[in-house]
Image (cartoon, rainbow, N blue to C red; front, side, top):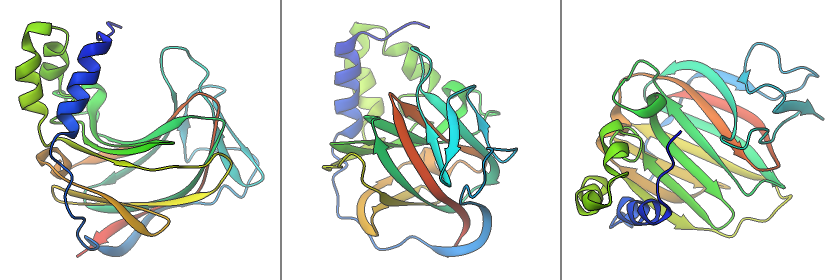
Length: 231
């Protein structure tokens, strides 16, 4: 896989985060029909999840993931067709520096790996991103390889993401809620709103799956629930 020059990654991310710092609105939706629920109260992962080989296990009713490949994080995926949704879960960084929550549509060929929407959780920052129209859009990914197109890339990435500074502790449980309604996404941490993004790719009509991508050592995940958004 071709790697982007570090400076291009930094500059593109700066453009992506751009001028998105805005007041966070109230809840976008209520919880409607429950589409998926897992409390991991069992020994084996089973058929609910599609996971990277040897990267996930269940212990004490908690899903534990760790990176086992040098070139990509460990993936734990749930296939649930959805559009407007509310997703909630609990997490603990138990050695891992970060993880992503990613919504995909593998049938969407204009985005790398069908990536549509991303919430990237790290100890010092939580980032909301429109992957479909941002850094994962195939033409933009190609442009980022060319230093002469830096300004054009920055312009294309304007408004496609937002970031919030946080100070997450290791080995502490947190709860997260992600609301996606139309072209809007709102994220809450421990029931307090921390991020909001409005961008066209969020309104993609079919999110066929959602997955966790774990980087580094252990991230603990529990109480995963997905509801249809009720407006």
